[in-house]
Image 1 (tube, rainbow, N blue to C red):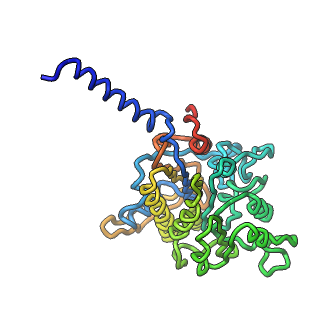
Image 2: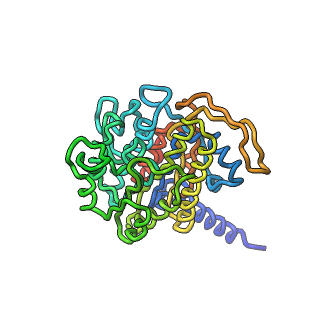
Image 3: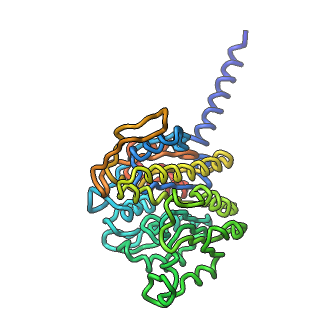
Length: 374
């Protein structure tokens, strides 16, 4: 028989141990906060887009996330948002009008997740399958009143302090005198970018320039080829970005966009929705592999909005085939989009959240602040 005094001491010791664990991992202690943050945005990705991808693949990397929820996406002035306003919410924690990028409706600039990260010594990076000047990446690196000002966005990107920049869009960085340029001035932003970091314009040269702490790869004049037409994957580009960014002992923030899920849905092209979804999902898998090994990385995967009013009507699980789909629109909808989270602070990203709250929570995780009130 164990003496009562020993039992009491053992109970107190157990209680202290449990309290220590809660303080570290559940109540805002230092270990709860991530060293690195990776945000994955499936442009236009709704629940049905994921459903179609799962039917085709059997199992998705998205299923590895222990935390999930839903996100409302309305902008400051419209129920149905678009990428500029929606990503501004994710990048800054604030709502703005459709087409505005990281500015309030009155034009006041909003500090972004990347700018907060840069200020505390973390590396920052973008990987997209669109032009890097497109609305989603632009919201992390620039401030303009209209997303169409891609030449202005390119100039701000060069001065943003970004450490890894991978996507398309070199036509916005070369002077008007260059063949294919979409600038109206003689500014050579490509040369300005090259003064800060190695720059490649071909996938064949990308690996040779990945040994430093900075790099840019502008791999197409505008958007990259569709996933089905590319001989390289978003996962490969994501792994490369992580390899470069993780050299910073202070950590990093990375945004990866599956840009062309949206365009496939605009085109009502189920086959390309699936191929773009699976390309995006493989990139998420690459990030999860890193996070599981590294142990101090928060990954959040969500969408800016839903595109197409997409629905899966028939198919076969056994044959991994989607045979009948439908669309309610060729544009965006106000439907909530899914959110998934893994790693330190991931439990905070469950339930139904607004996109601006998600953005504020990411900033709070970065700055090691307490979870904002509901």
